[in-house]
Amino acid sequence: MAKKLEFLSFSILFSWVVLLSFHKADALSNTEAEALIEWKNSLPNQSVFNSWVFPTHTNSSSTPPSPCKWYGITCNTAGNITQINLPSRGINGTLQNFDFSSFPNLLRLDLNENNLTGTIPINIGLMSNLQFLDLSTNSLHGSLPLSLANLTKVYELDISRNQIKGILDPRLFPQSSQSKTGLLSIKNLLFQDNQLGGRIPEGIGNLKSLRLLALDGNYFNGPIPSSFCNLSDLSILRLPNNVLSGEIPAELGTLTKLSDLRLFTNHLSGVVPKELGNLSSLTQWWRERKAQAFDSRRCFFSDCVANFVDLCWDYDIYVEKQITIKKFVGRIEYKDVVDSRLLPPGNEKIGDKLDLILKVGISCLSADPQARPTMRNVSNQLEVHGGDDRKYGLKHT
Image 1 (cartoon, rainbow, N blue to C red):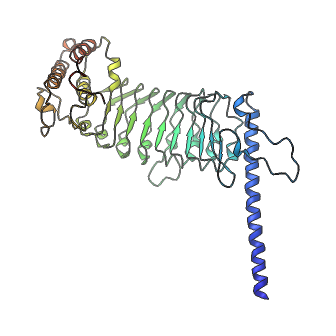
Image 2: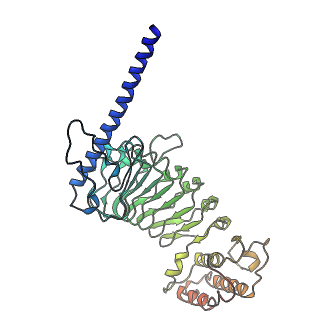
Image 3: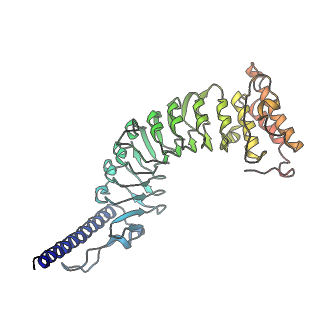
């Protein structure tokens, strides 16, 4: 008899736990729905939100309204919102009445390419489980809220093409491998085409999972952080169109996964580190310099290396792009520039093209700046000799 009572008590307790769980899920779902309706009501009337409505006939026994079938909303099996996907919908308004605290299970928030204005609310950092945040291509202004440092699970953060000002606060990034706050899980970090300035924080070098860093089109100044050498998974680094100064860190040559490096339109000085020649995966090396070549300035040392590397990678001269720059100073000969373990070009036209670039490179090393050819002249020379590429079986990569 006692065992039967014990089993009955356990069954009743289990039933209550299940009922409370469902009640809690329903309550949360209702809270999420109310938060979405509140945000919708703060915006101008727009058709994208036509499905965001509560049932017109409700009573105390009716099922709470579920937002899971609303446009742009995805839920988990418990009925909690996990994704809000509203990209490229022409949404007008602000995020000021978006209650981020009402979405504890949200994993993805995508509002890119809309017409959002105003600032990024401070409470955006309350979405502690968020993994993906894209607010790019809007008209958001103000500074980046420090609460973004609480998004420790975010793997992609894109706030590009807005009007964000201020600095990248160092506290947004982990200060050491033991840090508990900061963008610890970030893989893709994009702040392109804003109005950010100041120095690039050294703490970015502590983002061990970082694969893509795009800070182009801002006002960042000072040197490229040497801590970038710690980013062993980095494959894309885009820093052009800033005010960066100093030399290109030779340590970038240790980033063996780097395949896209863009540094043009800055105030960088010195020489191109020979260590960059060790990056066999590098396929995008200042390629945009071609678009800037038609000006009157005199060519520099870096233009010589960039043109030579561009040729090798643009036309896939060697299988799997095995070109290795060894040195590019003083008296330059073909054997000094191409890895001696590789056979010379089998195609005579390719060899002629390489020879031409080396000769142009030598002329760009003249001690007298006025004796160097202009970039227009350099570009014209290379273009004249590059017109028959397709005819001779060369292919663009």
